[in-house]
Structure formats: structure tokens, C-alpha cells
Image 1: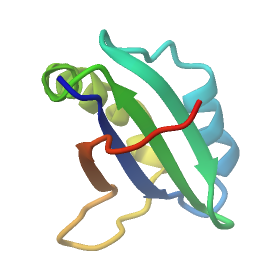
Image 2: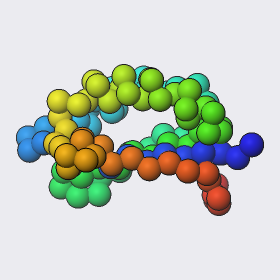
Image 3: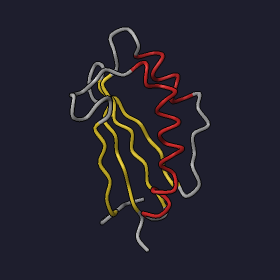
Image 4: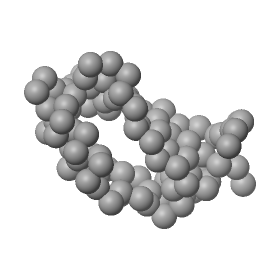
Length: 99
């Protein structure tokens, strides 16, 4: 079974960046099967979170917990588009990694 990764792009509302970051750093979010969790800032109000899971099954099992965590920071997020809502997610098999 191969590792599985996801990343999610967020755009934070004006004036909410510090609260958004605190929402991440103060959380105890670590679902079973999650091996790595990182977040980086890619613009003034744009952020990307990245996670690696033991398997696709582990990521699927973690989705309810990921949605529950998103609900704790949702008020800080700007709608990216009507189609996407407040997140722009991607996921797939890890094809290569370097430690």
C-alpha cells in the first residue's frame, strides 16, 4: 500500500490571518494514519496545508475529522469561488519522497 497525500489551499479574510494561524497552531489535529502535517503561507492571505497519510484508506477515514477541523476555522476563510467554496483541495498517491 502506498502513502497518500492531500493539500488544501485557503484564502483568509482580510484581518483574520493571525486568528487563522492560531487556529492551526493551537489545534491538536492529528488523525490516525497521518504521518506528516505542514502548512505554509504562499501569499499575503493565501495558505496551503499539506498532509501525508499511511494510505488512501487512512485519508478517507480521516475526512470526517478533517471536515470538523475545517469547521473550526471556516469563519476566517474567504470563498475562493462558488464551485470550490472556501477550500481548493487535491489528493493523490505519493510517487516520490525525500527525507
